[in-house]
Amino acid sequence: MRAAVMGTGSWGTAFAATLADAGTPVVMWGRRQDSVDQINAGCNADYLPDLQLPEGMSATTDPIKALEDADIVVLAVPSQTLRTNLGAWADHLPADAAVVSLMKGVELGTTKRMSEVIEEVGRVAPSRIVVLSGPNLAREIANKQPAASVVACRDHATADRVAAACATGYFRPYTNTDVVGTELGGAVKNVVALAVGMAEGMGMGDNTKASIITRGLAEMARLGVRLGADPGTFLGLAGVGDLIATCMSPLSRNRTFGENLGKGLTVAEVVALTRQTAEGVKSCHSVLDLARANDVEMPIAEAVTSVIDGDRTPEELVDLLMSRTRKHERS
Image 1 (cartoon, rainbow, N blue to C red):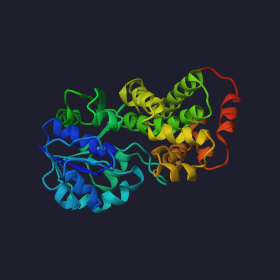
Image 2 (cartoon, rainbow, N blue to C red):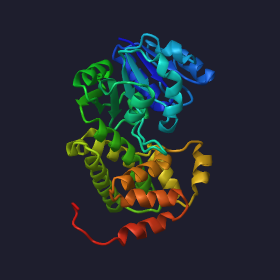
Image 3 (cartoon, helix red, strand yellow):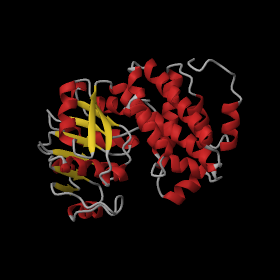
């Protein structure tokens, strides 16, 4: 079995190394020659400078070469670029390959999940589309710290095939057939992490952060169930597991981005400081649009979006959430 990993960012590289450690040879695709050269030299200094890449990994700037004869195609590009990238690659996807999404977002404009974009643009049957999600901070995976994840596909045999290809002594994949819930957990947790980060930046304590995480989980599950997800998925690795890791770890881009906002920086200032935009900064708009289209109330997502748009300050976000009408916890 052979894998192609399309994208040379931190999570794509960490997962590619996991595949190689599991005995699955990997060819990575990258758009920048310097990144490709680094990977072929055994490292990815731009994203994971401390990681010595295992044997069985190589890289190329030629997507056709990367995709050739791949049994598993892993998509590890930013979610908002998937449609454009996949449009260029669709004719070269191997006919029987499992297509794995590492992306955690909802497409702007269409409010489509990544699996829906893969099916539409890549012309891939749902039985071959796999979503991988869980508490998987790339740097910790790269350092071979024990972690678990969910490999979700409508076809359990395909999910099991991908899980077998990435299972190692430090990475334990569990299978699931709930693609909708697995994807929405990954997308919504980024938005909640921005809110938790803002609370941290304003100096608020664990009670505040735990309250945001718990109510964020309620919003995630509410949206997921409306769209047909299994409620149990949100109590597992792709739901509460990923939510906790992303909201509480200083390694999380979304939490760190929110923390800087909470300290008084603007979105533009945080981008200039970190030289990157967290996924939730863009996907908060599409998540909120998806919720509104399905008549689902998501006050945390709405408040975060208003801060990102510059309509409210983080302090006003807290006041807004705390002054909402009292209600039953499960309503």
